[in-house]
Image (cartoon, rainbow, N blue to C red; front, side, top):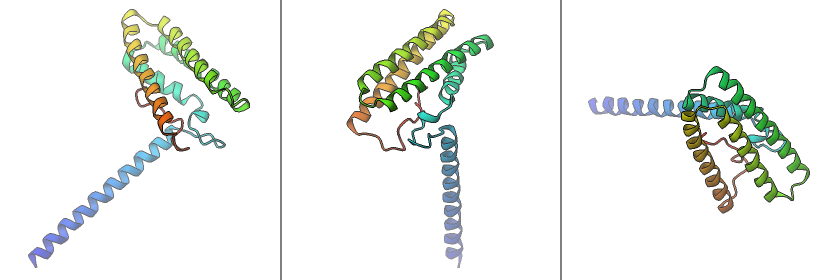
Length: 165
């Protein structure tokens, strides 16, 4: 009888633990889904982010570089302008999907121009930290680009935010 009680106790705890893990996992999935809005037509997260990426980058840069309030306003403006340029480029891509090579060059140019604007707003110490962040971001982009060349992503994976940003 004692063995049965012990087994029942262990099984009950295991079921409780599994339930908690499943509930936790569902909560994380819901958080990710809320953070990455999707375009209703394409299903791509980047196509409907409405400035979410710019806000995320601003938050990360503020934490990493200890941006002042004034710098935050200026950086947010530069990132919002970048998002607008990206949106215009995506629209251009929809209208002329046969120019993918030019698109990569344009994206890179937009990013570099924004990086230069942001760097001009920073102190020398902040610029050093910003350069590290830019290198990490660019490495993540290249890694993702090469991974996609080897194995194209499923539709639900396209446009997920970078984890290094």
